[in-house]
Image (cartoon, rainbow, N blue to C red; front, top):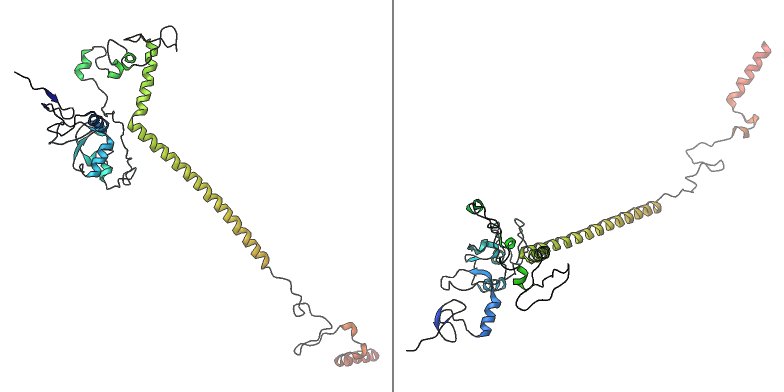
Length: 318
């Protein structure tokens, strides 16, 4: 009695006889197909009742599915921005704007926009294919009441294992006990013990690296960098406008001053504008003006002579 050798499809988990490809999902079993599937894997999942066991895809693969029309605004997906809960695609941050909708206000946007023009919420791309977006673990009420030490701590505080340090499991170079900063040689099969201070320093460094590797943090940093560039550009434009206004005002004032100087009245030297002269010929309607000193006594007016004789007669009579 012979046994039939069975294989499990690495893509959908279907059990089947040995073959070239999966009889359910059609995935090839060759190494290149496995590598291509690994490259396309990620934390984003699209709900498909026909293929419910397909692995998650990366953000780049999800964008390609949207461009091909295989993911629409009514598709149900999950990913880092939904904390791995199923949500309709038009309400998923990082995906809704690619479908023409704002995930916050449901307004119409352009897929190339970096933020919503209606509510101002920023859009981002979550490219970390190993980031699930799961929230921190919080202890339940009965776990806090139990009082067991370390039961409610998150895995980052407890460590990966209770029997070995995180550096030993992750393969980080261990620091020997001979002195701070001295790297001890690694033995075959295991790493030497690491002091508590060294573990704390390495844990803080790993926490900082993980924080910088967070897609949301990277998106915020890129947005802040764009805002700083915009502020610098606006500052330069304001300075240029102020300098142009100052130069324009100075030019206007100078031109107006020159115009006033060129249009100032010149003193007239014409005879009609000057004072009348004694030797000038009078006009017909103007009586001649004579100097009393030039008039001879014998040429006195006739109306004054009788008055002088009358006075002389009066004196003789008296």
